[in-house]
Length: 112
Image (spheres, rainbow, N blue to C red):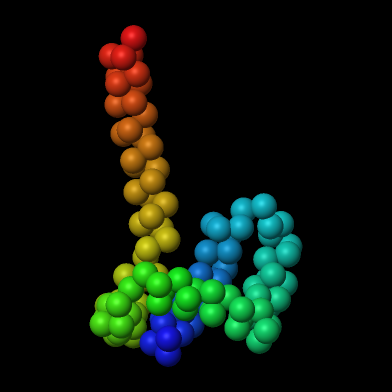
């Protein structure tokens, strides 16, 4: 579980950035985002979240895979890629929706 905790700690810092809070918690008023980030960072809240992430990681990945993720996330390239994942995910979902909608329309018309 120790390596899972290391990965979870890294993920905690990646998920609770200003950009990620805006993306993942859109209902949160902009004026409350800083207070929310501070609240989540309180030791007892952070510990709860990190342990939940670590548990999910330990159930999903082997020890070898966890170590590879930690090594990747610790590298300069891994950190660069992770900083770009949220914009990439957002852009790919937009592109996918743009392309899939006409295909879905065509599919549904062919079923009539």
